[in-house]
Structure formats: C-alpha cells, structure tokens
Length: 505
Image (cartoon, rainbow, N blue to C red; front, top):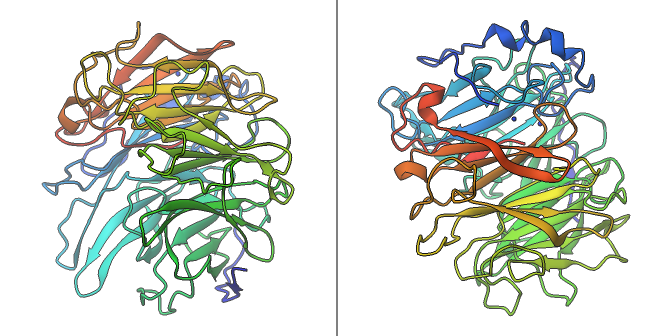
C-alpha cells in the first residue's frame, strides 16, 4: 500500500459559445474588459449561483483558458502564453478576454518557458473564485530541469496579472499530466498533486519521499498549502509519466489514474484511491479479457450516472499486444464502490465500433485530447476525443474530432458525431498535417446546462495554431455557427505560437 508521510507545513486558514474582438495584453500586463464584471452583471443573476470550478470571475458562467506554449515573448522563443475567454449568456467572446504571457526573459540563472502546456482550474484559496493552475518549464544552472507549478488567482475582475508559485519541482519530462487539481482527501478543498523523481534533492529543503507530492488546500495567497504529503505508488518496477484525478469510488474524495511505463516500454494505468488516510493502490487497470489497458491520456467522470466516476483511457498509439486499438482507441473502465466496478464490463471503442463514423486506420490517433461533458443536456456525460492523424481522402493527417455518447449503459458508439475542417459550416480548409483535434474541451460557457465543444489545433498554419468553437443543441454538438480564431485575434505574434496546444475544461 502506498505510504503517506505526514510532514505538515501548516498555514493560517484563509479564507465551463460566440465571438467578437476586444482588448489586447501588451508587455505582460493584463487588460480585463470592464464587461467581465460590469456589463455582464445584468445577466449574471440569470446564471447559476453555484460556483463553477472554471469560473474565474465568479459570474456563474464557465470560462476557458487556451495555451500557446510556442509564443515568443520579448525575443525569447517558446516563452509561452495563455488566453482566457470569459463565458456569458451568449457564450464566449474575445471582447471578454485576458492574455497572460510567460516571463520572456533569458535569466542568467536559467531559462523559463513553454507556459500554456498544461492548464487546470480550481478554487485553491476557498474564496469562491476559480483559479488557474499551470506550469512553466524551468532550467536552472547547476541544478536540473524542472517545472514551476504556479497559480493565477481568480476574482471579480478575472485572473490576477502575476502568478504565484506553488512549488518548483523536478516534475516528469512530459508536457501534460505533470500535475492535477482535485480534492484527494475529501475535505472540500482542492489539492494540487504532482509526480516527481524520488532520488532528486529539490529546491525544497526536504528530499522527496516517493513518487509524488500532495499539496493540500486551502492555499494562502503566497501559494503555501495547508499541509504537504509525499506518497509512493509501486516501487521501481515502472516509471510514472502523468496523472488524472476524479472520484471513482463515490466517496467524495478524488482518486488518481497514473499512466505508467515499464522498462520494456509497455504502458499501463495505475489506480490509486484517495481519502483521508492517503492513497490506496488498486493496481493496473485491465480490460474484460484481463489485459492491461495502456494509456496516453485519461479523463474521469460518471458516464452512466451510477454515482461512480468512470475512467476513460485514450490510447492513440498502435498496439502490438492484440488489443483492439487499430487507429487508436478509447477504453472505459467503469468505477464502483471499491474502485473498479464488478458488475460493468470494461469496453473498447474505436472507429471499427458500430455507430462510430469512419474506419480505423493506422496512425489515426484516436484517444488524443480527451474531455468529458454533457453535450445534449440528457444528464449523461459524453466523451470528445481527437484523431489528429485522420486522413481525409488524399489529405494526410488533416485530423478529426469524435463525440461519443454516454448513457445508462455507459459509453457507446451509437449516436457518435465526427467533425473535421471538411465538415459543412466548419471554418477553414483541411490541409496535410493540420492535425485538427490535438486538444478538446467540452464546456458550458453560456449556462444552458449543455456543453459546447472547443477544439485546439496547435499545428494549424505551420504551427501558429488555431481554435474552433462549436455550439450545441438538444441533439448534441453542431457545426452550424461554429467559428475559429488564432493568436493574432488574441493580439500577440502568431509565428510558431502553437495556439490551442492545451485547452482547460
């Protein structure tokens, strides 16, 4: 069983679609349009009063953060930036936007960049406003590569201009899944969980004691957690690449799905159940035939409304193990009271599954960029997944997005929808190497209790990048009225910005 060492760092308890043009951020300062807090006040009362995990300005509408880790800032390439679009009764609009940029300074003590590679949100300080949590890759001379986990605080005017550091740590080398934000101890305060190398002495005076660290909320405005714990997973037989959180067993505390790689290159997903006493290891997730399910991406949510989060695992890579993963696939391992359901059989879905548009072909990459949300208002979560390697006729790697339907029986291919740049009403033209669908987010930005679709494509226009926004109806996502925009709309240099590499949901 994983250990939890109670090294406490006490602190005082302190207290998810339309388009327009608007304000631009220059030289790292943030310009938040007055419409965020004032003009929108008339419709705020009509929005849900429930505080959303991604509502940065507290108006009752979900907001979206878009990463562009290739952005050049002050001549520093790949410094990175994040663009925030604020939700409203009419959806998202660039007239209600905010742009945050990486430091853009070649510090003699080390290089910092790729800001916008991973974005998550949660109310870390308990003030009722969601905060944006992100990482910046950090190279420190004579120390080692690592990442700074940081937070921009939410408030009535939007996100704070300057980030606050939570921790500098030797996080794993992947650019996504380096951390997750979730309440893993069940105390109603979001925590920040990171993976680290247990043989590295970090800038923290304490040596890490295991495979990861939990920074327990609430946090104060200086970025200090209420306490900090280390945890181990399963020794040295495998390495731990990235993690995702969600409540699988229905006890009110989030659990972890950790992507693993063994020395022979084989992959899997470890399940750790959270709770007041730390994590309990449940082992590698397996399919109905008892085969380990490999994973490159994952998301957790209750697809069938049985009160237990289900683990949706994306495996875009081709498999040589006899798994049904031609062209990539999505696997679902259903949750239950003890972690994995004993009554619902895990399922695999790819483009050869009945009802799913297209055909499974090598290199399609299904399982990339997973997101969960209710796209038609029926109360069941659906799954969006990118297929950035999808060929459209003779156009190689043009890319596509699939939306799979959830229901009482779980995830199914029936009723699935596909969207590409060749779909009627979708802006743009499908071109070789576009890789449309590298990132997705299902977001209810207008408060109608149905999630629209946001698609990120960092390879569009020779890696300048672009984002598409799709609205939704009672029949699900629709291309009618969809629109797209890129980094120039946000007001910064487009060249190789990789706009849309990450989208928060």
